[in-house]
Image 1: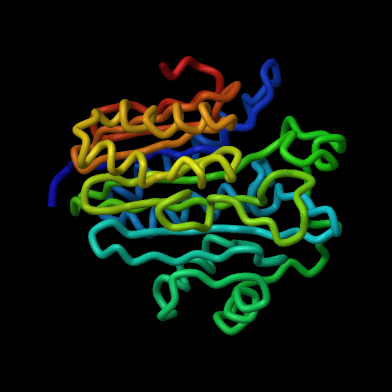
Image 2: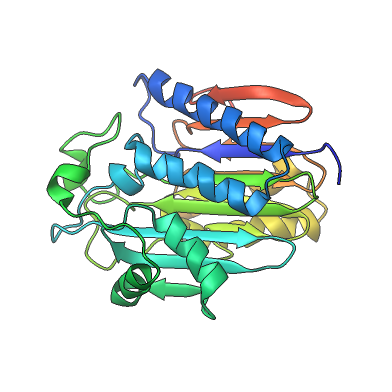
Length: 296
């Protein structure tokens, strides 16, 4: 056990230039403060990333959980995934409907199921069996997050968002978690990168990663494993490894961002969109929380 820890959070790489996200930045800083307390007290990275993402989901400030919008058939479909680095245990759900915490269900898949991913009706059935809270009145529960308009939810790929967390705990273990309501105006059944282990989320003994952006491009670019392989196999620095993925996403025509921590406690956060809502803290760094500050 050591005193070394690190935590990074993101609230999505879909903010609009010129919009005021001070409320979001304050919320991310508040969560980072709580995450720091938990990590210092010895909580596991896996539990901390779940707690962080569950709070992001329930806030209604981001395109995840309560801040999600219906697809083009009027249903809210949610995706989430979580992974523990040193064991490589992982769990995810895709196209799950009307559960309060998709990331909680994903963690239950990790802990209580022989599967890695459950989808649609099967994911909802599992959530019910595990006793997870359902959204009883979707029309009154879901709200538009800051910076999102009614026009955004009608136009596929005009607006996207995701939340995520990555952490290194004082036991030397890494974990990552990601959750999303997907892109606005999406067709029913559409699934992006978020619930795909190795694409939207990845954690191993060396690095933990959570992605956000236009999922189709992250999938085609190889996602989080492109970053992990760059860092672990190609000798990239942590920062270079993030840009290895983002540059390929951009080449393919997409945008987004990602956050990562490594076993040394280093943190990197990068995006090629207008901005990325993000916060970070470690044993050697005070809390930062920002949206549009340059990242390269």
